[in-house]
Image (cartoon, rainbow, N blue to C red; front, side, top):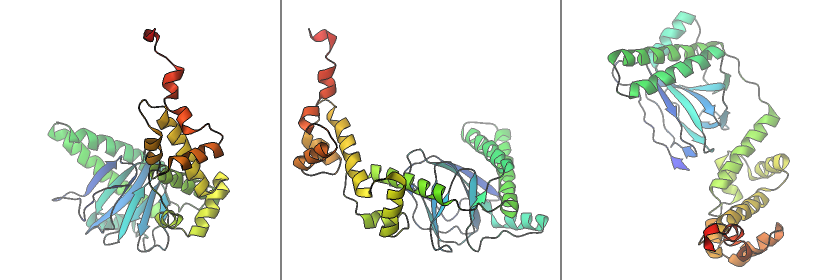
Amino acid sequence: MKPYPTAPRHLCGDRIADVRHVAVGEYRTQPHRHDDEFMFLLPRTGQLVLNVESNAAPVRVTPKSFVVVPPQRLHDTRGYRPGQAHVAVYVASDFVTFCERKARRKLSYARISIWSAPLLLLDAVRVATGMARAAEMPSTELAVLRADLAARTLAASCVEAGLTAAVLPPNPRDARAEIVRDICAFLDATLDRPVPLERIAYEFGMSRRALTRVFRDVTGESVVEYQSRRRVEVALTLLNSPGMTVLAAAAAVGIESPSYLARLFKRYGYAPPNVHKGASTRADPSPFGR
C-alpha cells in the first residue's frame, strides 16, 4: 500500500477550517496526532478503515457516514480500494467550542462512533469541495473568500451533525461483505508476493480464525483458494500479451515455479500455460500479413 503523508497541523494563521479532498486509493497513513484540530472524515467512494487508540477494534467508515477524531488522539487511516476517495475537514478547537456553546451541547468522542451523515452535511461537503478546487486554480480574491466561507460553513455543519446525528447501528451481514471486499482488494494488490494469513488478519484487525470464517461465509472459498484462482486469472491475461514468457507470468503473480503454475492451470480447468502464450495474437492474425 502507498504511504500517504499527513501532518500534526493543517490550519495556518487564523484559518478556522481546511477542506481536503483525498482521491488516493490503496493507501495508509502512519499513526499520528493532530495538535489542536478536530478531524471529520467523510468517505465518498469506498470505505475508510480508522484505527484509533480509544477503540479496541478498527472503525470502518462508509459513504454517507462520518467520524470525528479529536485533537491529540493517536490514529491512522487506510483505504484498500483503488477508487478510494474521501473528504477530511480539519476544524480549529476554538471554533468547535464556539459551536458547542451556541448549541448548548458537547460532542461525544470518548470512544469514536460512526455517525449517519445528514443531507445538509452532504450538501455542504459538495459545495465546500467544489469551492476548494476552484480556489486552487488562478482566481480572484473573491473566489478565495468564497472558498473560505464554504469551509467555515462545512465546519459548522460537521459540528452540528456530530451533535445531532444518529449513531449508525451495525449490520453484521453488510459489515462482513464490506470487509471481504476490502480483503479481496488487498489480496489482488499483493498477488506478486506471498502474504501469510497472519499478515492479512493483522491488516484487518482480525484473528486468523475470524478471517478464514468470514471470508468463506461471504465468498464460498478460502483465502488460499481465492489467491490461487486470481493468480491463474491474472497469469492467463498476462500470457496473452505479446512477448510474455511463462516464467515472467508466473513471477508476476508470485509463483517461482512454472511447473506449479501449470498445476494450478490444470486445477482450474485450463490448458497448460504455454498453450495460452500469445493466444490472442494467434487467434486474431493481422489482415496485412498475407
